[in-house]
Length: 356
Image (cartoon, rainbow, N blue to C red; front, side, top):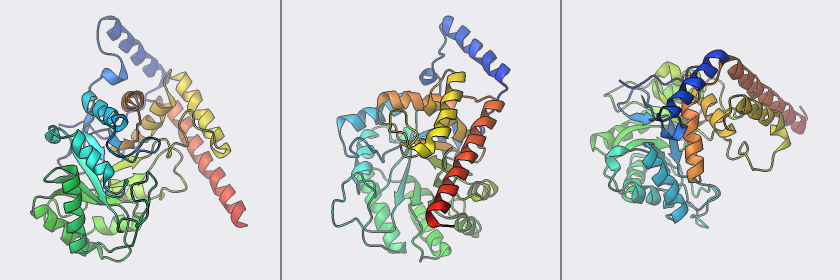
């Protein structure tokens, strides 16, 4: 049986007691390092997909998204330490990220869960291979378009099926029932095991989740959404509730807020107070900011897995540590209040700029 999709919070006394136990295990020859511990797997929503609580993305920012030694080292490290959940999209350098992932997992396809996404557009005419996220001419998710996009992803990934096939955004045109029927056909053809949504409003997720179920694979299975400690302005307040009530899986992306919370980046003044709190908590727990960020997201019971963008072997190991970190209750409360305060400050600044 998979463990529950939840990170338990501890009292500070219990936390330090657990640290002492780990230290004793290390002295006795046990594995106490975060990277050395086995990775738990949880069920993605109501599917039979068992996924690690950290998933690795391929939307690299500082290194190229194509097949190169840097990206290969990152992805091979993920495989070597037991990460089995990988995310890509046709729009990440328009096919290059999918090709990279397909080459890396060759020979290990049965060990991994692949999630990729279809964009509501064609590739841009200019510079489609850039790391910047660019869309071209809009297209609707008709049956023909979804079939073509699925075939393209299968070809680039070098596989005969997709474990999770997501709509990268709402096309604003196609009725949910029509999309569900198209996905059902892809499922019946053995090309898509499960499907879902990304960047959809809570209301639209609810509409998809409310569609009549024809079989276990015809209904939406989960979402990929922008959820992290600084996401208050962009994360719909009721989305997590909708996801939880519907029993959907959620892949929470960008724990470091697209690099804004990454150590070493030039600090944005608006993030200063939040970063101060993160670093204070990390110091108290003798851990890193990256691990605190991942542990905070995973503490939400609606979150199945956190989608990170490690760009080095060291980043991979650091991020994995966040899946093992249990934040004491009082420190969790401090972090959550810092998150709410950050949202209030950002909202006040936005209102000031708009003159409201």
